[in-house]
Image (cartoon, rainbow, N blue to C red; front, side, top):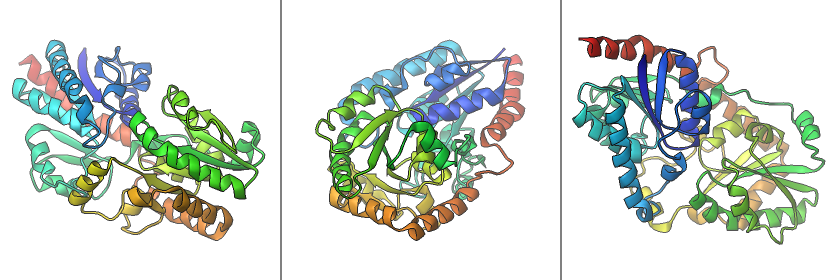
Length: 384
């Protein structure tokens, strides 16, 4: 039986890994590092919880550096013990690239594939050369990415964005009835990492307090990526002047909401695909922010804005991520239906460029390439 070793480092990577496992089918053993979705789809018990490497930023990672180095060493040893036919890494480049680089030296004939191309068009273009030395193939989620890697000799295939394969809901009134929502519903995504939540919640809480003075029927649902985050968020809501609750059923909540306050990330694609207007906010450690700003080659952080190079989703980053600015932007969207409808229409146009509602299935395309080109080659080479 063929064996594939996966390494996924966050919830979006766990979802992509799940889709790949389901489309790769039977007669393959799946091992490695993944999350609950990958385990539910057939991967053996994960080597460790992906929450341990679900970190972002530069300064933010420093307190965890010794733990990360230990996990990298443990993962390398686990790969050597399993001797897989293919190693597939998904996103989380700070962790996955370091593992893959070492494995390339230790197992030079092993086929190594990475899913989610690093954003070399945004910053650090030299990463294209580094990836070309380590990986046999790269699966890109964005249509304009392959040329950046082809010119350095790396096989890069555009597959589309697997996150858009999900079943999205669009009947807002029916969902509101199901959720027993009678007022104005605002959904909030504060982050999938504890550090993000701690940065965002003091700002988001004050933002919601301001909105609640104008919209007395305001109901807030905090969308969680991890149930343990509920207690973390609750500590900021002790004196809230608005109704709130928590939910893990993110796609239903995204579609039911009248508006969203979204942390920058993959969730913005899901909210847009749910046809809900939003604003995007993000705050980093100050040193990390200046570091990123010095390296960045792009004006925006949201894909829906990056692709057309213009602002479709209002973005409020770092110094603009304040309660007064965020609340004013949300109130503007809530009070102007023409602006919200325009955002939904323009977002839909960008989503279609990423393969949304097309006949092709990104994870199936990737699985077919893996089975027909790389898994077959690995099995042949291992039998010689």
